[in-house]
Image 1: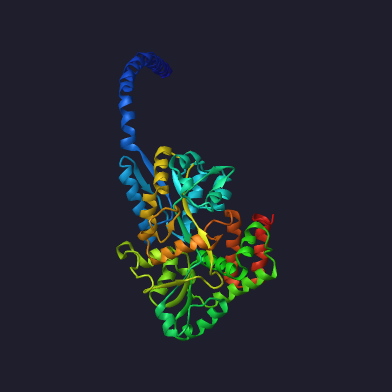
Image 2: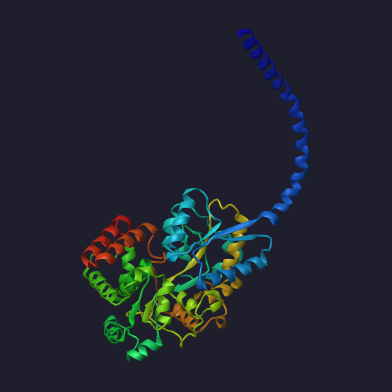
Length: 448
């Protein structure tokens, strides 16, 4: 038996050596094929842009006027770039909350989309620039001549150390109070200009079984809060919340938060379960008198029903006014797009950004979205009566930024405010809420 094992071992050794000796004789065959592959390479390289170039764009525009506006701009892009595949990686929910959580995970994994939606202001500068996650676009601005057609108030909000980091596509107004002409007429009330007038108007509205102020999920409560703070503090003290000159623990902030608390007594009980569209539709359906939300509501109210909008006539099916205390103030935000640091398809991304900043792209996008152009040379006749009024106010009102939509606070400060707000919505303890806001300013805001 042992002899058989020895013979078997010798046989295996011989076969092993034979395999090793045979290997070099196969290598030349592989090497002789390599030049054939190299002669084919140039053909592959010339075909790659047409066959495989693409741009992945990340946003949270998935429904209503938002999606319709994005589709309109994509159509312009496709017409000018037929060889580039547009990949729409929009994620729904929470005014970008869900999308930005997905985006943060991808950026942490070094898997960025080519370009993504970002709000002008501290969302860009204090988050993406601070994290070295996006590229400067100075050369693009110079080549396209955009500094001559974008407002001077906007450029500093997307710039740092002489570099410009995004391409704004629009201007939105955050402080708008939408109302049902039918509900307020039936209640015999006027559109309120102060919060005291609002509380008085709520009495007959609620006595008729209607909701006085519709509200949705938590981010819409933050939106409402910042509008109340603006109306109660005025633009200078409101701005001071974000630069450290207004004390979050002051008596004037206490009074503003108490007003906010009182306003919440007149919102729908199912607010936490509703999207912003759901809350706005309560006004459109004449179930609620008022809704305080940005002017993307105009796109939802007036847009084509085929795109999931309501098809209402501005001034007839719905009305609008400045929320109490904010007349003459334009609380703004601006959606923009950035170029990822390490974008997988940088040339295609630049082609997309050119459309974002172009007159043609913005004129296609904004009338449908329910916003006005970031550019100053768009044709006003393309816009409805509400948006024309927004153009006039943007040019003449005092301009302040939005917290909820990224202008005034970086993500860390905003997240701490949001955490405090969530607790407040549960217990409605103004004193504890104010203490938490003071702490947030000290740990993540300008009070550090």
